[in-house]
Image (cartoon, rainbow, N blue to C red; front, side, top):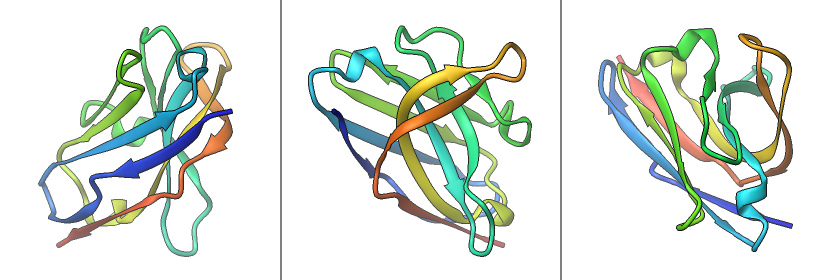
Length: 125
């Protein structure tokens, strides 16, 4: 089992940056792939990006490629999402997730088994 707690959400102007963090508890953190999803009001939850348990090549949704970066530190049981060039339409609750990476490149996604409670990101225009 792993418990996930996100932090770092808040209000930012369009074009600005935020760094989300996810702290995990549980001795099995390093065995999970980790990732981020987001859910805007009225929309389905969507995959943002994910990274394997070993910290290898991350995979991203096309909409965030080149602007968002995922990293993980297995020694500290943390995973981060650096978001640059934020857009108003990216206002959403962002969720940290633990699971397995599925699919074949370039269509690799995280299949989540565990979720955090989410952190709200608001991008003003």
